[in-house]
Amino acid sequence: PGGNAAQQKYSALDQINKNNVRNLKVAWTYPSGNKAGGVESIPLIIEGRMYITTPSQELISLDASTGKELWRFNPAREKERFAGVNRGIAYWKPHTGGIIFYTSGNFLNAVDAGTGRADSSFGQDGRVLLNEALDGNANTSPAAPVLYKDLVIVGVGGGPGRVKAYDARS
Image (cartoon, rainbow, N blue to C red):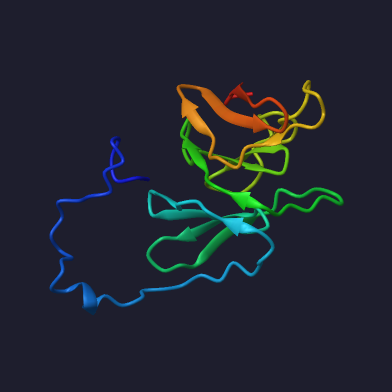
């Protein structure tokens, strides 16, 4: 997101310009079906799939050319419900399909990008509790996780802010 590494948001492509932009038409829309919260993230498009989050912190994979839903991952377990702001997702490709990392509530989730299932090799059944070993009042930063080599880096707020890094493989 952001155009390039310098965040310039400019493209030298010339297919769309000030003379023909008014001729653009909507190719498809996708209604996520939930409204509890906010999404302030940019979708990721990887190998023809679009990955988005919803206001209730679900992660969805769509066919990027048609908008057809391929799968939907709900991070809630038992009586959990998530809402609030989500500002992004991160993609890591250690194998075919890759892994999507994103936060919901106080959790960092790892979801198989091909199947839409929690990556059971990460944390405890595909997620880690971000405020573990902290003062108990910490909560997630709504910023997107960042990947560096095999590390997933995420901010943890509430009280003194912290940054945590997790081994993406475990």
